[in-house]
Length: 449
Image (cartoon, rainbow, N blue to C red; front, side, top):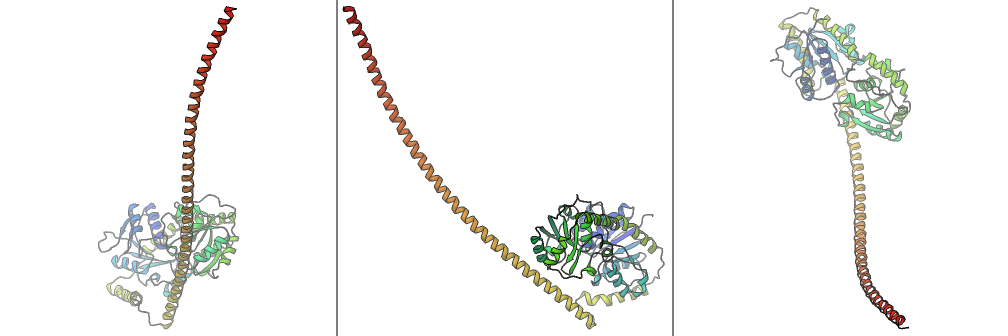
């Protein structure tokens, strides 16, 4: 298809969250396919810098942007609405990545001509919020750039190293306990672990088993790691050829996290590890979650969206904007909507978040206490080593003194031997003189007789 002008909008570009990675890979892929792409984010950071370094334009203000897009592709409602208000002739494509958060609510705008969901929960969320588009919602699964996520070598028969990728932390102590009991070394990365990495495609190749959900699980499987779908919200289990197709429709995410997380349950999933089955899962994921497969699907949606007619006029835009603000403003400033059910739901969510944070703090306190105990033990060991070194130094000093005494004795002995040698030499000289005299006397006697 002919190249299009595309504005990719994401609410932030400063880390490695799912939509940020999606935006970066989409932008690079669309540019490679001949499209003119600008990425917009009102909150840029290192990810925006990485895009610029790769040659892709990034804007954090639209009022000064000299660009007239055919399509505004938004992963969040606010940034999509922002782009469409700035470019009134553009068509909008909204992609829902989260079935709960209000910034992922589908914007009810005439300019939005296509609604896309990454899984069934997101599709249902769009249908619930906008019943008029229920029959037109598309599902395009999360995709990864297979040029970046290249396959690792064959998995070992038994896993040795594991990695937890997570936005949460409450489940990490249980993962750690399960891995220790199974003889696995566990590392952690992601916001929940407080470790943000930008080399995940290569880093994943060091691990045999990965604990993750959603896009992070897809990335791990695309590299060839075995994946257990789990986070603080619940456990689904090890992805196998029996489950991969069904779980794909739920983005390996919240809908399948139906089991409680415990160290015992994690150990049971680790015991199901099968290197050959994981290799088959990797092939399946690379086939169905390839960016090269998703991009043509989005291009078709863009093409269809630009061909659709929409009503225009400031009165319609004003009504639409008023409708959006009426829904958004209570959420933006922290005021809850009137619905008591929603208030209760938000309170419950906040209580769960607070409980999770308290568990996290308690876990970190235990970790700090364990580290302090370990440091104290190491300090005692160092003190013992220092005492041992001091004792050895005293031993060496005593040996040095003994050696010096022996050297002195040897010197005295040498001097005594030298004196004796002189005496013996003098005696030998006297004896030689006497022998010579005796020989002369004997010779004289012989001549006389």
